[in-house]
Image (tube, rainbow, N blue to C red; front, side, top):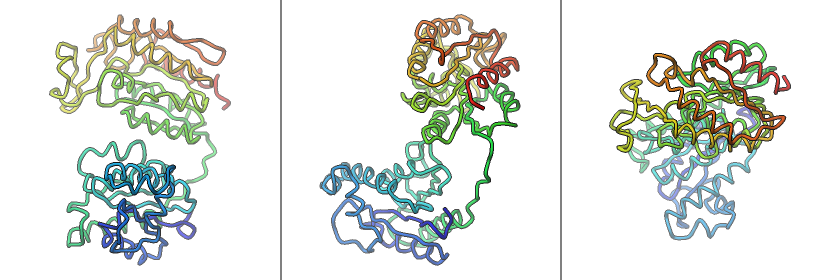
Length: 404
């Protein structure tokens, strides 16, 4: 879409933020770009500003209708309006961008819809919550969060400046939108951690002449972002070689995936080569953040804000079973590669996390769980994950199972 065909949507609760909505709408109109305002109020009461799209109109998109939103229970009403707004935005075919204004309730109401919009479409949330942990609001999307500084509760010298910046940022994003050049190469997703960087760099160097390589940092949100692109059919293949998010999911780390990790691979049947990159570690932040139950474990201080804990043989066995069960749900072409020489830069001879027993426990559990088929295979290699020969093997296996 270009700015002549599509519209900037501006959403907030007009019953409490009507003046702000009118102010932002006026600034965007002055740029010459088309825009529409949306009221997401959950109370059926007169508003200070009549939005282009009423709250009742949005509420009708809830599966249970308007009554689910206008229920006189604020918490339930916000949750219901979030569902309705998500469905409303997904029904639109003229979205150039979405700008949201809100406090805690408005941010929780607007950002789920933003998360459902395509990657690359501008999404900006002006929020009182933007100076804290915004992971729940951003998810795996490319939402920009702008701290409102003052509450979104009236116009003053600060709010006018912040809202003005927001209006001009979203307008600029639409007006100066980069046209993505047509890429004749298929897209492939790769997962990487600092301790598997040499592997991914070597793989990328081998395939980038034929593939558009999208590397995702395996930080929980990175894996979710990759799998969102898989579900949206925006990737043609995957080299999911760094699956460390599973450690944090199962054992309480801070960079966890969800229970749906590998689900997109199973749902789409996308060709995938996986491995156990960085399954030797659980991630915590500063040392004081480590749960007391782990006090006697082996740790490595990566930096002042990152503390790594070595996974035990028992934990590796659990991961082997968990991953094996996930792989059994994959009907598309999948290969799982086991680098028996070590799972990360720290899991190498002379390094802090070298533990052959732990790796063996993972391999044994995976072999016991995984159901081998003509499309689903397990390949063991004596190489370390960062050995160039492992990268060569990963590329070879991917070429065998893909159509490119």
